[in-house]
Image 1: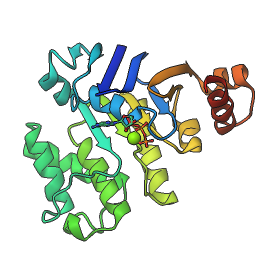
Image 2: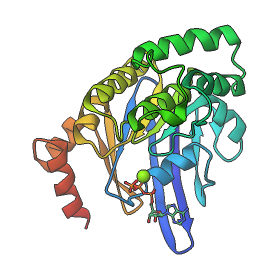
Image 3: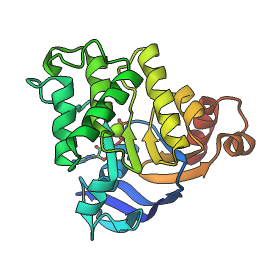
Image 4: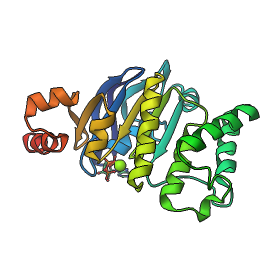
Length: 241
Ligand SMILES: Nc1ncnc2c1ncn2[C@@H]1O[C@H](COP(=O)(O)OP(=O)(O)OP(=O)(O)O)[C@@H](O)[C@H]1O
Ligand SMILES: [Mg+2]
């Protein structure tokens, strides 16, 4: 369970995130949707304790992002699109192992989980190749596997499928849905409408740092009309502009 209350982040004069409140239950996937610069990444970075809120609070499970950052970091898996953070000179398996060790995982558990994730993401062919030599999509899948090696209860994914081809995207989607079935709490941001429609139980629409609406796709569709989430989003953007 995850709960934000009035979460705010200013950078000088810019209020990047402005009093955002929502909660996400176990076994729920919450999607953050908004145009470029809306404040999605900044919100996720505060949840991940990478940025300190200017005001407001966020709790992940029983831990507070400001009071208990270490405990928060131990209970989350994070993946920020674009920045894989892999060590180029290490193989995929070594990258994953290193991260597992940082999270105090026993060696046998790291091995078992690496095999499981390698199969889930079809990485068997390149698991022992150096990360620096891989394609963008291969790196993204490796980074995805690494981020969840410790089987965290809460997962924060900022544009998790950016740069992936259709097949890889489907593997990641299937995996995220499996995590949900296991009762994980998941927050993700995305620009891909059908990804959001396929994965998310509820969606928060963020515009200029403010959460302008929250609901299931069905609820948003009933409220704003329009068939696809894309149409709903365009209509809503007109309303709040
Ligand atoms: N470190 C920073 N210093 C100054 N301003 C920042 C910083 N990080 C983000 N911002 C500003 O905060 C606002 C929100 O940015 P953010 O990256 O959260 O948007 P986003 O919704 O993730 O956009 P995108 O869809 O392009 O990824 C933008 O105006 C951005 O310029
Ligand atoms: Mg972003």
